[in-house]
Length: 313
Length: 326
Image (tube, rainbow over all chains, first blue to last red; front, side, top):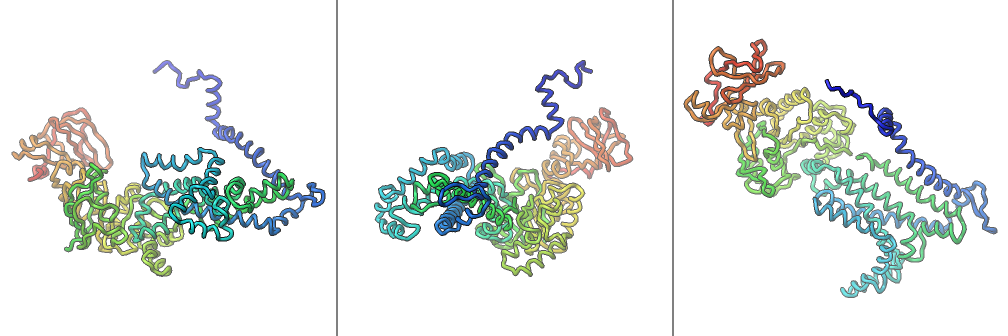
């Protein structure tokens, strides 16, 4: 027998705290969750609700003063043609960016999840993440230079004697313009570039979790590769695509800098919120505009869930 | 008998690693063929070569008389039961089973009826609406079986299908698989590292080691007449006697094998020191040191059990000693 006690009682304050937390694991979780919960609950959600509450007030059209009475009048204003256009334009842009990002992102993510190993995997992550390290403004202004009339893209089209093609495209109403940098197409391209990593990474994560045997089983049962993609790979990757689309869709819905720097003078929701809460001093309408992306996202997720997008989770 | 699957000098290399090294196999139609070996011995790669997931580095593979090197898996009329079952988690059990028929373009009603019948066959009728995640390991295994068999393949490939099941379920499934194979008359190619599984189920067993086939034969031949020490050791852990030992007993200088259950205590015979004694339930296993050669013997219930450290005499009948290569 050793003369040492079986339980080492020589513990300090920290030791006693550890023991107490070991006996009550729920206390530990509570202590860990408390600070972020306070932060999220009070500072973030609290201020969000304070803003949203403003949308139920209205503005006196003569005095410009906010009337603190509950009303849905401000929401009614969203349906005025000039405001409703902004919403439709933003939603169409967000949807286009999301679809474009999914189409470009899926093969990249598939390559990374299935084939890239070792060094190539590191290069993949670097390639995806590196654009995120530089300032968002730098990226957007770079694109303005690329897309400008004197920019590299125009030069490229000229060199290839394809200027007629670019000009024909730019003469198309709505998506065209004087140059790409002042067209809706330019806005789309920059959105697509800036948010693409947020689409690729979740898809890649979801594809990593699809065992190779699942794809082999599909082929074994007679499915051609295209059928395997349609019936097995896409359904299993769908949660990742949905997660990515939540990013690209909501980020596009809320952004106000990209369309301001690259694009036509036609406004997006973010610009509308910025203008109404600032110079126009119409906080209620700005708040009502801010509610739109939140509602759209809620509806989008609800539909995705109903359609079984999360069944493979 | 016609040949179902034939390998002629098939190799599969990964860089310098020879996963499969010049293998010849000839599996007859309707045969239950087991590929047995330790992990990394090339048996699963052989199965994947048949299914078409791998392409041979060298050699010819024929399935029902057709050379298939350039044929992708989806054009081969063989189906696989995967080790991890590989059931599609987003589909319910019925749609999993009907998957191959759906791909083949069958009408929804027809394929669902066929899927329900296949589920009935593996005793899972009524489970069609569940998701695979709601099933136990044994049930998933049956679904994987039904999903493969519903396509009426000419050969069924099974990659350690019972590996994840507990002992009792495994024994039950072994019997069911065997009955199923007899009734359907389909060629089964069964990969396992469990020698008792291979011996109890298969018509013929191929023993793999280091990418090569060491011995092919009936379970009895593999068990009683191993041709190499590896087979004797791996299949049912026979006692492998060194050539010098065998030379003294028989005059032939070759490795010998004696089954542990053939060894018994004797008044005279070989002096042996008892090292460990383990009670196994149906028998007692005794490890011995016979003049420097480690041996084990299995003593039946009721036999006198020696104590460890004791020196005893052991012996076996002359025809229980199998001389390899003889």
